[in-house]
Image 1: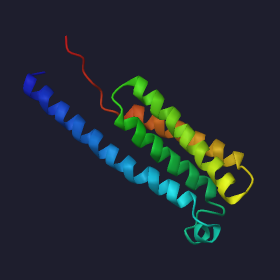
Image 2: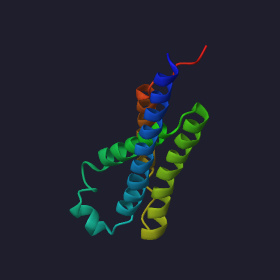
Image 3: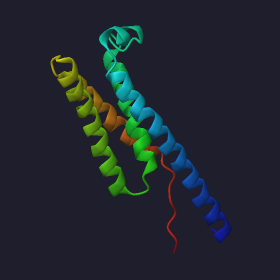
Length: 133
């Protein structure tokens, strides 16, 4: 691979990481905001009911996918994976403390499953980096 091709690949990688960082800066606060809406507003947004668990799974899969794609290293992905797990747990504990509702352990497990799925998708879809000889 020529140095020009390597330079183009590096620029493309940086641009791609920026896109995922911007997405993370939008998606993570949006999920936190929606999580702390009053129950009436959650019903209007259909975040309660029979699709509640699917919403958790998709949301945290997306968070973990974005987090996994922003990191260039395996160590970074591990930290972001753990951070995504803590974010899911923090949302559930926060809802419990703010609203005085029971801690929904099923939501915590579904969030964790979403994080695992999203992280795996990020790892599998990440572009392969060729090592220089």
